[in-house]
Image (cartoon, rainbow, N blue to C red; front, side):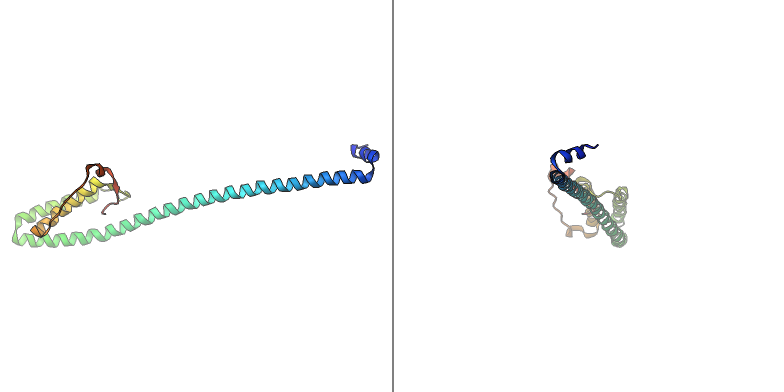
Length: 167
């Protein structure tokens, strides 16, 4: 009844077995080859996706590490800076109360600048950082007088550049 029975009867069992064996063998071989190609391509694509995801995780971890280091630096800098400045103001109070008053005002401006900055900011405009440095140097000038000399040369085009805070 089946087509293969008729084929076998008409061409002989040996020929039918050889034809089916060759056809089935090639079909099986081609199917395995195609399966291997598809599986290999899938493996490569998934591997690349995992690598991209891992790279993103590493970049995020690096950003968080840098931010934590900056926060630690700020935590150490603020008390050290504050105590040194207060010590300088204390000596001004004895010798020059007018300059001590100016120093307290400048310290207030400087601390306000620090508090206004976002702790989450990875960078600030160079102009903002220079403003902070100028306030700091104005405060130090009261303490150091003529011993502090500063030259500033900044190109106007660079003021919008982003730099790490407290650089």
